[in-house]
Length: 335
Ligand code: NAD
Ligand code: UFG
Image 1: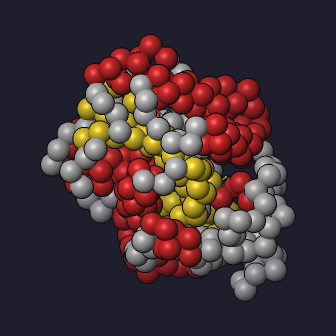
Image 2: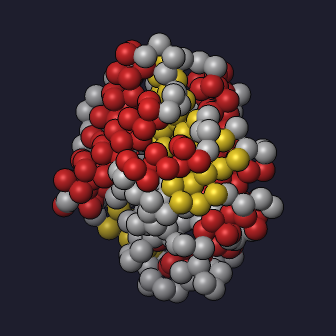
C-alpha cells in the first residue's frame, strides 16, 4: 500500500514508518519539521533498509498536499501531525486549535478530492476526561476535555465520525494512545523534546544522564498503592505495530471506530523510577513534591477491543521500555 504519514518525522510517526517499510508498504511522509529533526527520514531508512519518500510540507498547505496525492496514489493516511503539549495548549489555545483542527480539515478535503477514504488518527486517552472509572473502555462517554489539546482530540474524533456518517465508504480508526515511552532498540529514533521535558520518561532519562539534578514526583499522597499516580505506559514500537494492524482493519471496515492502544495495566511513578534503575543501572534521585494540576490518580486502558478487532496486544516489558529510552537518551548526538 501507499501510505501517507503526516507527522511521520516525529516520535511515534517515525517508529511507525519503520514498521510500515519493514512490512513492505511504500511510505510517504508529510512533516513540516516543527517538532522533528531533518535527519529522521535518513535514520528511518537505515533501520528499515528502505527509504521513505519525504516532503517537508505543512499539512495545512492544500496545494502542497495535492502535489503529494498527484504524485502517489495514496491508499491510506496515518495522521500524526499536530501539537501535543498540554501546558502550552492552555497558554496558547489558538495555536493548538489552528494547527490541529486546520491540518485535519485540509487533509480530509484533499483526501476527498482524490478519492482516498481510509484514515488512522492519533487520538489520546485524554478524551476519557476526568469522570470515567479505570480501566477506560471505548464505549464510555468521551465528551469532556480538561485542556485545549484534549479538546482538539475530541473535536477531530467528532469530525471523523461526522465524515463517516456522511460517506458510507469512509473508513476511520481513532487510536486512543495511553502513555508511549521507549525508543527504537537501535538507539536511532526516540523522544527528543526541546527544553525541560514535561513528560516523565524523558525527564527521568535526563536525570539519569546528570543533565537535570533530580526528579520531582508530582504528588505522593494519592489513593494508590504507593501514593503516586498510575499510568498505562507502552513501548513506542508496540504502539507503532498497532498502526499497521489499524490500517489493515480500516481498509475493510467502513465507519469510525475508536480503539485504545495500551497494555491494560497501571504502573506508578515510583515503580517506573525503580524499573529504570534495574534496567539501566543508573540511579534516579527524586523528591516527592506537590501534585501537578490536572493530573488524574489512575489512567489505564481496557485493551480488549484492540485485541479483538486488530489482533494487537502490547508485548514489550517495562524494563525494555526503560532500557530503550536510556539507550536513545544516552547516545551522543540525540540531544
Ligand atoms: P511529535 O511532536 O514528535 O510528532 C508530531 C509531528 O508532526 C512532528 O514531527 C511535527 O514536526 C509534525 N507537525 C506538527 N504540525 C504539523 C503540520 N501542521 N504539518 C506538518 N507536520 C506537522 O509527537 P508524537 O509524540 O509523535 O505524537 C504524534 C501524535 O500522537 C500527535 O497527534 C499527538 O497528539 C498524538 N499523541 C501523542 C501522545 C504522546 O504521549 N506522545 C499521546 C497521545 C496522542
Ligand atoms: N510526573 C512526575 N514528574 C515529572 C513528570 C511527570 O511525577 O516530572 C508524573 C505525572 O504526575 C504523571 C506521570 O508522571 O503521574 C506521567 O506524566 P506524563 O506527563 O508523562 O504523562 P500524562 O499521563 O500526564 O500525560 C499523557 C500525555 C498527554 C495526554 C495525557 C492524557 O503526555 O499528552 O497523557 O492521558 F493528554
